[in-house]
Length: 148
Image 1: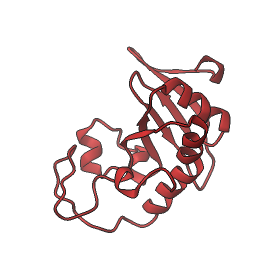
Image 2: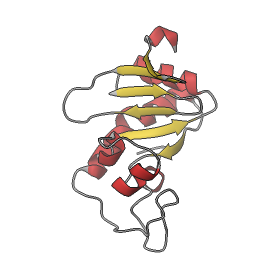
Image 3: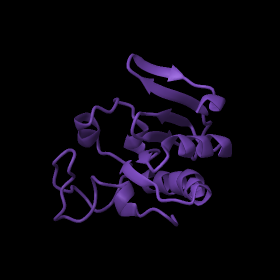
Image 4: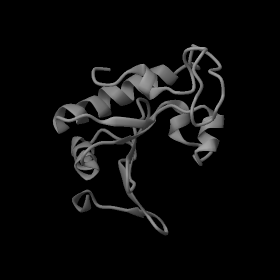
């Protein structure tokens, strides 16, 4: 995890004094459930750090791992990959360029381009779908990588 810290990837667990700003829960624990940290490290090492190096500019994490309360509070789906540490919502100076870089590298499960951020997920175990979507006013639209 060269360009990203554990703190920015995890907001629902940490120092006892902090509170998650999204779900308003006091920090419940300093230790993540089994497998979560490994998923986060893999997402960063295999997807986010290489994208950051290629982009040559900072990438800001809006949301990484979420506890179920946090996920529900921000409108996440019940089976969100954020719950397992396999997804992050990020933004940078040029989100479309970032999306192209991630897709060209080919190491992602799902990439969704939103108006103000990019959602990216990665499974360290099992198959990755390499699904590219764009959020539209009416829902989600499949996008060809050349359309990014």
